[in-house]
Amino acid sequence: QVQLVESGGGSVESGESLRLSCLVSGYTYSRYCMGWFRQAPGKEREGVAFIDSDGSTSYADSVKGRFIISQDNATNTLYLQMNSLQPEDTAMYYCAADPSHLTSLRCLRYSGGGYELADFGDWGQGTQVTVSS
Image (cartoon, rainbow, N blue to C red):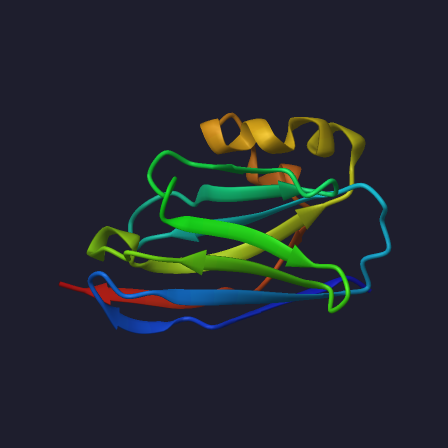
């Protein structure tokens, strides 16, 4: 059974950093796409960073240069290093994964939009990030 569990959220001030973790269990696929999404109150869930099974990454323009997505295959953990946080980064953050061929092919293009949330079959429960000015 696949399970994704996020941690690392919290409340910080503008300009500070946080690192989110997503512990992935039960994932034995050799090819996959994983991503971090966020959802602010009253807004749609948006993808901010993606990584494929080759380790290639892509980022939404809103976080490019500030956020870094990475994975540690030894510990089955997905990370999101968030630097220079701003109040507009306040949201619930979710990790997601999918092993399908189509999602894997599209993975790095998702940072430009064009995804459906249903493209990702596995989701964590979310971790809250709040940035005050």
